Image 1 (cartoon, helix red, strand yellow):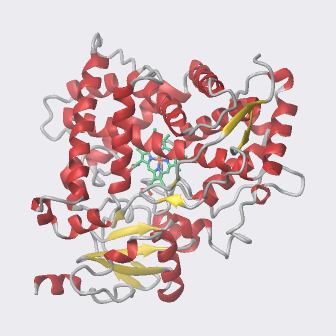
Image 2: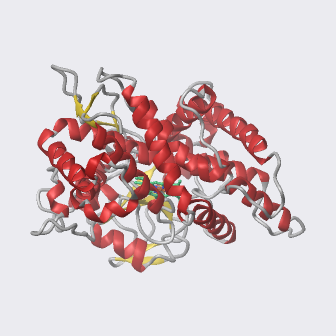
Length: 476
Ligand code: HEM
């Protein structure tokens, strides 16, 4: 009976598909949920509701409605839902899943400052990214044009940029402990939106059921936190107070500085959670974008050729790309933007919650309601995009070939919780992609064409594929 009472929609709440008893609409999130939810919005309206086993949820679709919630009502749609899974994993602390309030503000500020201080503000940071790009293309070269799966190399190269900020150092591509940590962490990103996870959120007592994917999730998390604990210990050796060398040092300074404040949110536990979240949020997303970009280059040789032509004309005599070249390469920019739009790296954003009662499109939404932002429905919004189902980089160019911005482009989401790594991700994507394309022609092994159907999870990634990177020019 309690379950049935829990499932009833409050007065004025948005309508939605009929739930089945007890588990509600959980099963509707099993296959391509972003596509299913967009279709449902065509029936029930841009904002509609779901019952995820008693957890009342609203789904926000289309650019107009997403902007209304995340931007116009930015102070309302800025919390994270207190789901049992998140409570168990990070106690609603850390940064990414932290409840909106003092703790989130303090952690976000520290991370943003560190990203600026140890990253973009340092002139030598760009040089370090370029160095990593070289390790990356050299490692690809070792395959000598033979088929290989680029997933591990891209993951290692990309995560090293975040590692530089967090730990002040990179990990070598054969560091199997680090690789294993990233692997099981990204497995968790997938499991976190599996139907098992939703069932756990609705019925936390299934924790005591001796089988199921949630068990794997908890085992992985424990292993990841254990590894991070050791790594943090290692990289904080030799720390001089108030002379931080990286994010971990800066965090420990805050911890020490506020030691006597009982309300202070900095803690060793929150440090581990934040480090983990920054690593995975920065790695999984940027890696997937580059893996999709490589796949689409091999799939569309004419687009690849135009990328090659632009790169060759800007980088005379094979010189190394710098961030300044970005403005001179509108087609490369257009390709990377179209990959972000078309491939929908984080299709449903990261679940949000309302921080107070509110009204949207005439519907009442109580404080604490879970909110799913369907970013895929923004990128495929027919009101703003012609033929959204076609991969067409030109849509980001004007008649003169200059880069053209679009409003309905939100791969990094919007508002108070929008991605804090956007600038870093853009630097990385441009430098890795141009360095790669400057040197190689990408093609599939003869007679093979991989599927473009994504592997589902919190992020969308290509299914494993093999590719041949054939050298275009001599080493400079
Ligand atoms: C949040 C996308 C790269 C760190 C997010 C969100 C999205 C997103 C959609 C959810 C925001 C919301 O709640 O609405 C992406 C994409 C990336 C990328 C597409 C690359 C192409 C990065 C990088 C970092 C990063 C490089 C840092 C190293 C974070 C963090 C949050 C976040 C910490 C949580 C922010 C908060 O809750 O305050 N990202 N991201 N991301 N991202 Fe990214």
